[in-house]
Length: 344
Ligand code: FES
Image 1: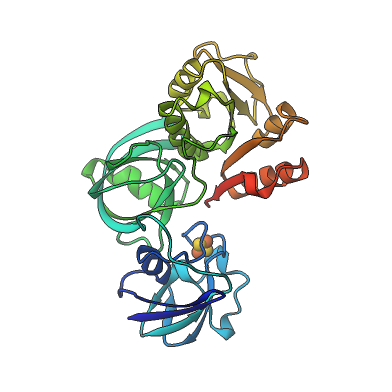
Image 2: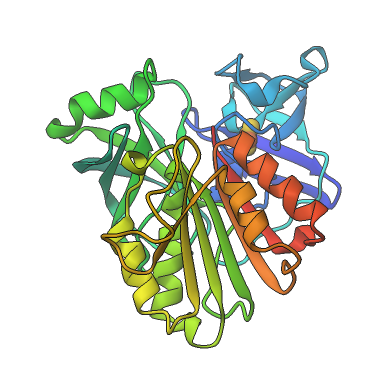
């Protein structure tokens, strides 16, 4: 099918396969179509189908709450074309620099439990992928409508295996399927890399990472990239990692390693929202500090009045991300210096 997109910056035309979303088709052909979550939750990819037939697969997608469906509004990340279409997008679109995201086949391997309801797993890719620290992929599996977004934990220039983190949700059919089928190495579709909340080794600013639960995944990739670039020789960093209790914390060993090799320039604070910390520092993992409270409040208190000259990375549940961004903006941080991904 041929998709013609009218945008504030002109008209673009691209091909769209029967089985791919309009968003994926445009992105893989190098266009900067608007998106954030790529999984139907944020509403950023809103567009209006002016002519032609298109079908939104997940009608109840939370990101579609404000669509004017009677006027042809759709979420491009959830919509497949059923004929040639003309689509209007309310933002500028240009041709992106660099390699565009692409679809690959993947095989899930090596599921490992990290915390009571969190697991890590690898996806072996059918073709290597290059990505930036902080980016994510969307994974789709047969029998599960829509896709799920996961940030890469690892960081390499080019990888054939990506490491991801999943939170097990009671009644969350995909996560339960993954835990059940994991030993059989199930096949999935992988689209990416996606996301603009990236860290490059030449940012030139101090960095602050604020993560809730499995949101720490992308921060691990950022820390690995920073570590490889000896970033903390010349810059300071802080990581605030929020979990409910000490039992829910994971990746403490690599975090402790990053703190130990940071020349004293990286503070890592694990915040417990549902119990008191056993002490000011972790007894088993040197370099990790402990605190009690919601992670955005712990971060806000620790940085009180010292928010300038840093890049802020935020990841986690949407409520936590929203609260953190609000607190940062109220504290005087420019929105240009806040990078975040909001998955649900
Ligand atoms: Fe489509 Fe978020 S990008 S709803």
